[in-house]
Length: 121
Image 1 (cartoon, rainbow, N blue to C red):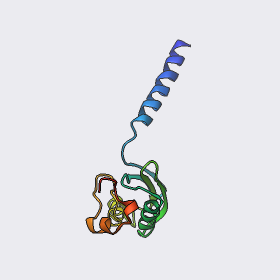
Image 2: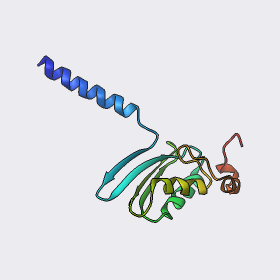
Image 3: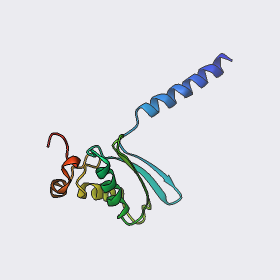
Image 4: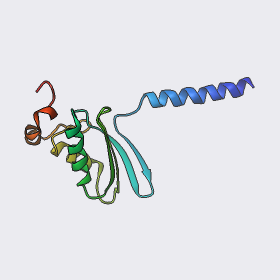
């Protein structure tokens, strides 16, 4: 019985510690589709959220987009045969926002509404 309790505790501890150390971007593949999470920490408002969603939905092969403004993340389901993870990041940066460690396109950033620009700018 003690061994069973030790195993259950070990599995629980591993699951909790693994979820606490979530990577910046993660990927899940299911039946020819891939779902990734991209950090978009430069979003400031609802206009930003809509712009990121719109930019991602324009990419060929994108099946679904969910942008979480508060978490600063976009979750995208796409077909890898039609596009790449890098193309998703590029779509976000060309819209004027950061994507993981990639900086926003400076010209696109300058065209953003003032409410969408970072407070230090």
